[in-house]
Length: 253
Image (cartoon, rainbow, N blue to C red; front, side):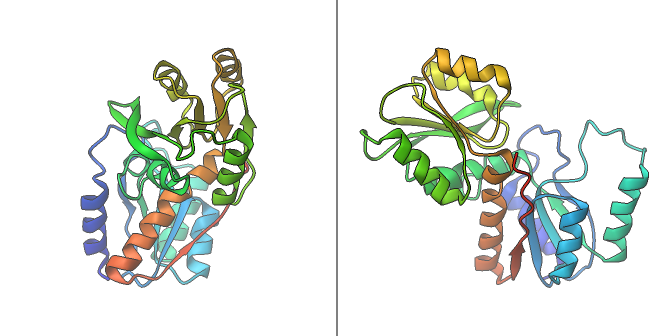
């Protein structure tokens, strides 16, 4: 597939300009003009660059890309030069989608997790940079045991989570913001949701959740944000027949 056609489709599908973002979303580094196989990953790092090439890929789709607005443009460190040189030497393209992928209605990190947990009655939540990037819903069985719900999450993510049962009651209403979503805890409290799922949060928020009786499930910043890239790859496979490989480099964070 032609690279420019793929980029044009991704831009249309993910709409990188629909939300203000620190990430410079879209094609960050152009490689081969013809895409033979794509790699998808949570992070655009030297590890994922090397793994892309080793797996015969010449296009990398990443949730966390290389270029961010807070990075001082014009200053290329030796390490950054090494990364760019590797990309250029191997004609590897890098495409990034950060917040647009978090909030996407089909392939979004939050949407995929929402569906994996078989939640119902979806609502948007989590106001961030002027857009709602998270989701809320209810469990099918309103008498769901908290430990059973945690087991479901661990089964779907194929990883362990840190879970805190602060409500002392069954799980009924669940809010989700993947990655670093602690800013949504207050909204979950205000909207009377008993369980909040995110990737990670800081120490103090533990006490905020406990004192307000809100269950917290920290499922990992990395692990919760593998879902969107995988979903995009599956979408491209179905639409264009593009072969892909998911590159798993867990951080345990």
